[in-house]
Length: 275
Image 1 (cartoon, helix red, strand yellow):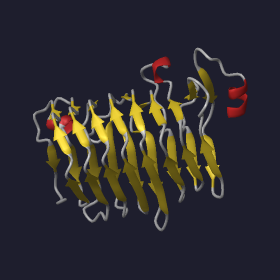
Image 2 (cartoon, rainbow, N blue to C red):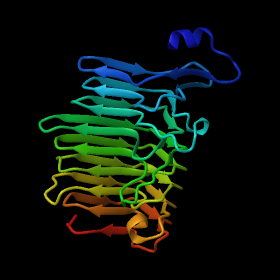
Image 3 (cartoon, one colour):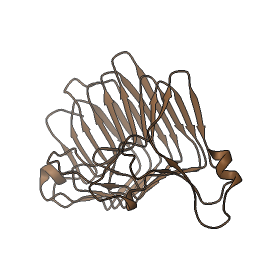
Image 4 (cartoon, rainbow, N blue to C red):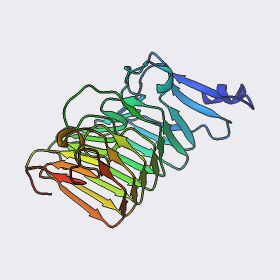
């Protein structure tokens, strides 16, 4: 598809490859995605496609110098879609410089959805990713609803490493972790600013069982002017984080400024189990 697009690329206007259905990447398969050298090029979700963009079921995907567009401005407000990347069954995803994700509407997982079963490790290594223009449509009344850029779940192990990157002007939190798996999450020196969500945890939310083995670390970075807009402590708690879990969460340095909760709840809200 890239070769066809390159051969017919226009110097002005947009050059688009539409994704009609979820693209499977199974065990033993490796897919490298790049649109480098093609002006104004996008890999865009087709209007009728509400599934995942890529279903990485044991395979490997690497992205570099590519714009992935969820096409949300051109579908009805109530139409949501699956994550751009669903990674499971021991699959792996690596994003490299020049990867941009934009215009995705979701009720839960919007960009990267990592899932693992017992005895299986799923990985994502995210470098210099840019995410903007995400939005949420959800009628749920639970604290942890709403779109999350990174969504981690399962009884096995997910390893998520985010290095650098810019995440701005989204209706989504950065991270959501759920389940009792031994997940390892490291968020290193990213910029997460001017984002909002009508649910709890503007930057992160963690909901695990009390005996969760998950370890989550934020190492440096800038987190500024993010806010929860829910009208009560349940739907709008935690201008930075909202934790109901036995998982370990560490904030190691970094700058946290101007983050707020419309409900007036603490910026870091913890319920039930220690972190």
